[in-house]
Length: 217
Image 1: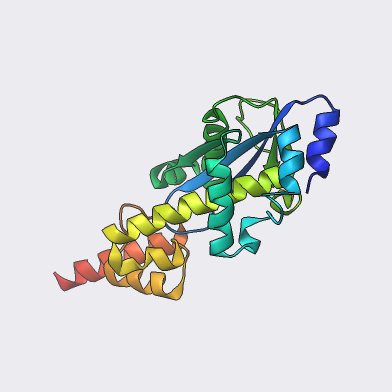
Image 2: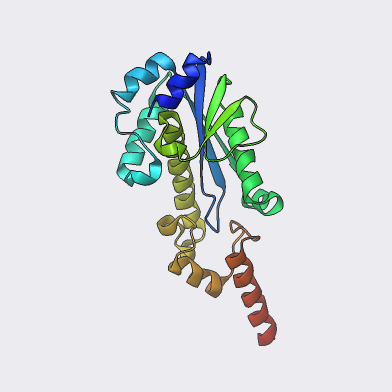
């Protein structure tokens, strides 16, 4: 999990950050990106110590994600930046461009700009520093894995809070993904302001609700 970090340290980069996102696929809520920067000496020790076992957030249980999130968030020498793009921005820009915007915001939110960032997936435009894209990076780079945990936990907590505003949709359970429960609520109650109106299932649910309302008049 440190091969890419060591490669870039040897190339002369001093402070590296990992960048990842959560929430590209859901029908509702923001897309959240996180950047995590850790200096080399600390990261070498942490990878065999308190961050041992850290990997792609999707491979961790919720309890493990919360555990690693707390360790990262509470450590005074670990730098964290979070950025997001709203449902309106997703509709206006498209999900790929909105994700890149969220990632750039996450890097800019770091207390100190890194020398270079390792990004999960494909190349990202608009970042404020140089970057290397790593396909499957959240399972191959500990910095990207750290960012994936921060992004996932942050977004999940947002959706739990949104659930209190719109309890009929079950956001706390499915986090905005197109589950059967979510789709039933969409067709029964229609989209909310936190839904991504440009996503096909949301558009279709809205159209069906409008047609039913027109026919009832």
